[in-house]
Image (cartoon, rainbow, N blue to C red; front, side, top):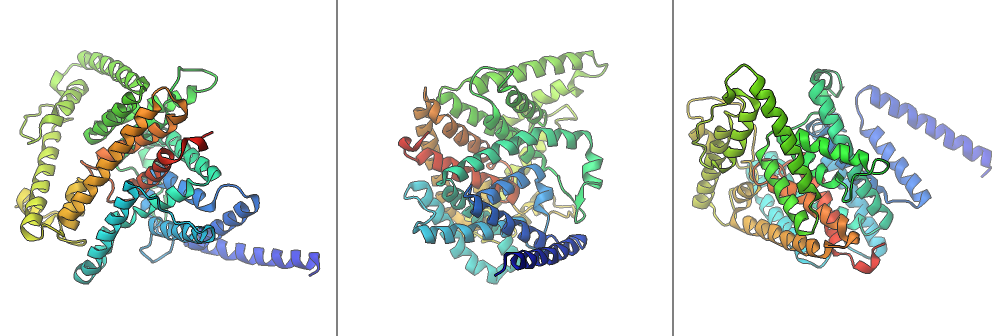
Length: 482
């Protein structure tokens, strides 16, 4: 074919496609634009032989769900269809991963305990959903998302096997958590702009779930904080962003996130890294001194100050029954939050163990019905939360004791893996990134025991991608490290 004719044909096709995409965007239908962008990126990456296209897509999903959070999660790329980026992204990533694996004659699976347990977790959930869809309909598929989000783990693990893609995915994590303190502070300072003006399809582009934001800020602190001493010319920006995220996260008084942060810092201390603990103590000391001084200067009852609210928030962690009397208006809901969880957990446990202890009530079952009758017996509420703020209790209700045992095994195996990595990282700078990723995962894993984290895409998708990367880093042979 004549080169000029070929150029003319390609140009005409590009103009037609651009016109079609522009018209779709004008009608707020972004699916075609997104699909075109993905195909263009795929073509460019194939030509440059750089990181895999699925690595770029995984990095984009992490960025979207951490930075955009609930706002990004509510956007439907296909107008009129309840299909979100979580499902479309998973379909695209899995398709590419499986095709690439078929060409290379490899499957995205490692023969180890964590991979095996996660496959078992998916198999148990899949066996359960086949029955539940007939019973509960579409709502069962919505609850089943906590199972199929795990597939992101295998996709990230497969991507990490390619060096350039692994580096890209790690860079995407750093970039994401570097942006988070900035965007979260801007949302705090200018809430009206983000809720009323920065909209896509009538939905805020950035809309944070409070407790999850604190979890991600602490995760970013673990990932961003440099190991060595402060250096103006090299690491100052990482110190600034890490400490900003830590301080802002602490100000939110999210107890579940604080417990996750404590566990993560404990793992790092076990590896010989004391800098995160020192930074935490320093920020807390300076913050408490400033807040206490400001509280003492205020002309009001000390029990109504921020300093006393912090004291009561910390004390509420051990107030399991929620019966302690709280005096500060800023922390008065802490005891109620404890009772809220305790009653809900007790209700789901009793109903499941008395009705279907082995395989659970199923995906689609209303885990809140009995709790509402007990906790709000005289009120009519529009209660939409479907998960009882604990991944283990959610699993018990959905999948019974077999699901809980499998999930406990996942936590146990991951703890052994982190302990092994922490031992190897002592005095070994090559292993520093491994233990950092492992510790960051524990911030989310512990927070999931006290909140709705792994049941929704905002927390689950970044976590499973990060865990897939962390697990590959922890299991790859040391001789491949550079």
